[in-house]
Length: 284
Ligand code: SAM
Image (cartoon, rainbow, N blue to C red; front, top):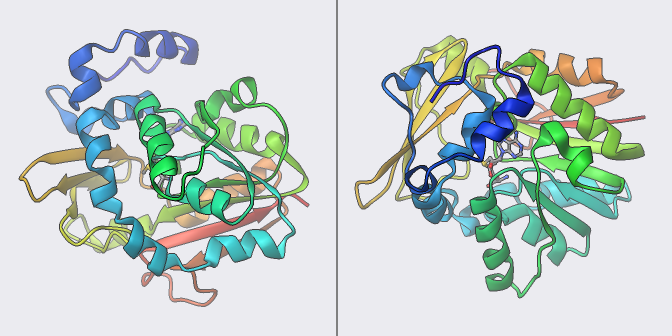
């Protein structure tokens, strides 16, 4: 499964089109799952079975109560009208944004996630989401126009495994924002996970009651989490454990001028306490 390190991104994309029908339904990590440290692999992780269960994992009602109006208020206080949800997933934030009257485009690199998002949009309030299948690394090619805001939430940015890919994705986000636009990215508090050891089992802040999410393997280059569902089925995600200071530095390097980082939606926190950090980065 792991592609060779010297494969070019364009070759990677072509390789992805050869995903077999089994791989569209089941996760395949190969003989040594902890060696799968590859940005392109996310399309093989968010596959049929896992996508069907994703909404049990995130529990929309509980999540909605947990985050309250945090993101809506961040956007409204900046006079935002147009929003690109770059990591739509099954559409939780996109549906919420449409409901609040934002002009919303919903992008994701996983067609299965987008299909689920579209039907969720209809089911939750009859919203027709404008979905676009796009990888962040080539966002400007596939999504057109400029936005007041881009959101990339639900610990999605963690799927990028190389610094090159992270810089490329941030540069694409930057380029798609208006001159005074804002980027909101959240991330698990990996500093705490890494520094407290791989046994740490911090709450997944949007986890449904019936689903357990725990670290299966953690080192400086990989956070592999296992998700267990009530029917006994297990799925995994291989992610890159972003350190907070590192991600803030990358955003600054790409050109964002002001970055506020919240811990579990609060402005003041001790570093190890929050489960999630939320970076609100302004372009000017
Ligand atoms: N934002 C949603 C939420 O909070 O429920 C989804 C979060 S899910 C953890 C991560 C999403 O990011 C998946 O839908 C995945 O397909 C998408 N994703 C990961 N890497 C991507 C990339 N390079 N380009 C576009 N989408 C990507």
